Length: 478
Ligand SMILES: [Ca+2]
Image (cartoon, rainbow, N blue to C red):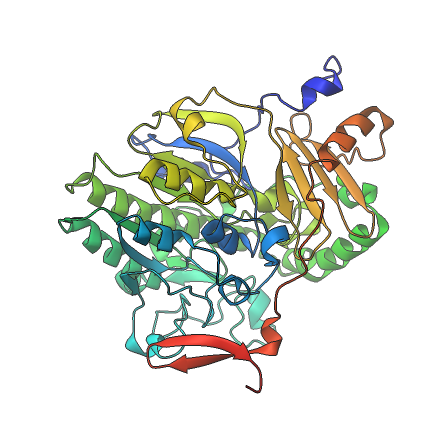
C-alpha cells in the first residue's frame, strides 16, 4: 500500500469485492441457493454501484442526480419537474409496450409515475382509486404470527405498523400469496406471452426491506446459531467529526445496543438473509420463465438494488448515510452484446442505467442525462476509465464522491471523511485529516456538484387528489 503514489490512487483495482454487495454481510448460503449471480447462471456483467438512498428511484427514472432534481428525500419529481421524460416514457416513445409492477417508485400512495405504462399492475382495484400505493404488506397480504414479530417492535407500545427492524417467517403454504410472489407471477405471465412489438418490463421486489417477511423455508436456510455477524469496530466512531459522531452514537444506543440487549441481533440478520434468498428465488422464477420463452435471446436484463444496508457498522442499522455499506449495490447486466461471466472494476452509478438502456434499446436520446451509457464496459469489462461518481445525502450540500476505491465525504457543516477501501474495506480509518492524502481529497472534492438544487416541494405542503383511477398532487387548500 505504501508504495503507491497519490496520483495512481484515483484509478486502481478494487480487491475486496463481495458477492452480494447490498447485504453488508457475507451471504454464502445465497450462492448455494442461487444468488443474484445464480448458480449455473453467472451470465451477468457485474458492476460496482455506489449511488443512492431514498431519491435513487427518482434518479433512475430521470437519469439525473438529486443535486439537479431536488429530490433528496420523498419529494415527487413529476410534480416539480413534469418536463423530465421518465424512463418508461422513453421506452413508450421508442415503440415499446411498457409494463410495470411492484416497488419501482417510493411505495406510498401518490408516488408512482403513471405516465407511459401500458399496464402498471397492482393487486386490487381499491389501490387504483387510492393513489396506487405499492405497499407489500397491506391489502390482505399474509403476515407472520405473532404480529409484530420482532421483539424490538413487540416491546414498542407505540407500534403502529411501522416496519423498521421488523421481520419474521410467513407459513410456506402462503408463499404464493405474498405480494412479491404475486407480482413476480404477473411479470412471468407477461414474459410467457408472444409479443408482436418490443416490450419493456420492470418488476420491483419489496424484499429485502423492512419488514423482512419471507416464507419459513428461507428462514430455515439460516439457523440463528450459524449467523455470521458483520465485523464491528467499537472505536469506529472516534475519528469522525463531533456532529457525525454524536448523531451515530445516539443512534447506536437506541437501536444497535437495544438489539444486543434483547438478544435479537442474529434473528434480525436471519430475517434479512431469508428475505434476500426469497427475492433470489423470485428472480430465478423470472429468469427460468424468460429462458423458456420466445424472448430468451433478444432481451436485455438489468438487475439492481436501490440501496445497500448497514447492519451495525458505525452503530448504524439501515441506510440514509454516505458510507459504502448503504450505497454499494448489486448491478448486473445480461443480454445481447454484453460479456458473459465477467465483472468490472468500473465505477458506476444507478443514473447510468437510463442512458445505458437508451443506448442498448435504441430509445430517444436525452442530452441532459447526468449518467453515462455503460455499453462500452458491458461489452468489454476491462475498458475502465478514471471516473468519479456522486452520492447525494438526504439534504442539499452534503455528499460522497467515489472514484475506484476512494470515498470522500463532506457534510454541509464542514465535516469530512476520506476512506481508502482497498486498504480499509470497512471504512474504519478516516484519512481526511492526514496530510498525505490532501491531494486526493482536493481532486475528489473538485468533482462534486458546483451547486445543489434546493429541495423540491415538500410533501407536507401538498395534497394528493384522486380522480377515478388516477391522481395528481396540488398545493394544500386548492
Ligand atoms: Ca473510524
